Length: 566
Image (cartoon, rainbow, N blue to C red; front, side, top):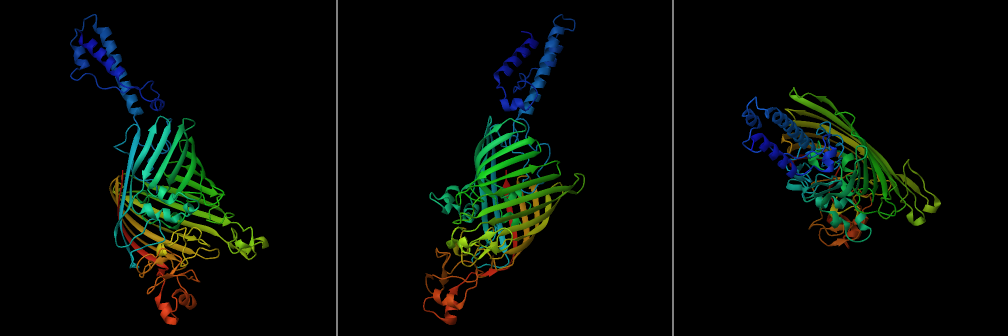
């Protein structure tokens, strides 16, 4: 058989035997029916086979024409195959089969976005993800129980700890979408303790979700630049490896980093996302009271140097056991890359600014609710129906600013920044874990009552060594200050002998836990309370034997961390 004919027939059979690309892949390219085409039969050189034919052969011209057409078709199919090949961005959480949103620029410089640009292990249907975060933190207050508080990122002092170990990934089959990411390490216990919603009702939601970092399933429609609907639990700006600093400022630590509910995602253009939310409540697994929360996000990336995100929340009744109190909040950030030069040693610089504002409002419906009334705009008189008295101002206002510089082709980076916050009533201030206290139990040593004041500020300097997109070696020094005693001091925040199982109790060093209360809520009691707590002991003896946590107004900490993500 003529060699050219043999090549031609082989190519037809090879092309016919290989699968046709999915509809999603077809939509991604203008080439019709992008087939995955292998190379022609090994050892057969179409050009050499053709050269063996006499130039004057009457069959040469038509055979040459057919061969040229076949070669052109093979080249066309190979190009289509490359265009249709799945990529990490296409299979990510914001996939569209028309165009991947925000895919026309490099966004790895963004705070909270992460630096991974590709995933070598990705397949057509699944993009895996693995995260490991191990740290060593030195608290200059030297707490004797090695326990740190007031943070969603820093928990233990002078120990090597696995903060996060997660694995999972994104799944995509046709237009059906899903994602899961597990959560092991300290995050598995420190995150649920900040949510009191599991206390309403049964089935122990804290344990049900404690090992789940992200989980959702949904559907994608090829309209505009993509429409997605997902039922989900998800985290935002939560992973240390994705952020510019290890310990972020107060605005990040004291405002939501996870939601559970239903979301939609609408991409009218490839640079704009509109995402409405119907969620159980503010940073909750369950629903605090009778009304769920409503909210949403608008994300706009106009150019590769500019990013703005607006998050808003309202309507939810988010105080446990106080069904009439509503919460409103706005969390807005802007990020600007103001320098980018790959030719210079210092190759990139950017800043981010975040501002938050919100409040709680509501008055009781009967005199039993007296003293729990709150208002967005200053103290004011509560109605007689609510028992009279004062409706205390209850708001949150804060900001944070960071500037980051990269050099040596993004191998090194330094970030400097900080922020401030004010939160009367402390309704968003993280509760210190004194004697095992949680958001549900509360603690008399740091009360969260209307009228309690709290203001704070912080600053950090962070150096990163990033030899690969998959790993970061981080060194950080930070200082945080509060207007009242809040951070763990040298004496620690754990009673003698360990937690006694009742965070509201005094603990006498010579007896068992006894009832009592702390009048100031700032970690200091009085003689009368001490005598009552220590049954029968009086005066200095009672004061000396009553246990109080050691709380300080300032905290300086040094952090070393190794973070892996791929």
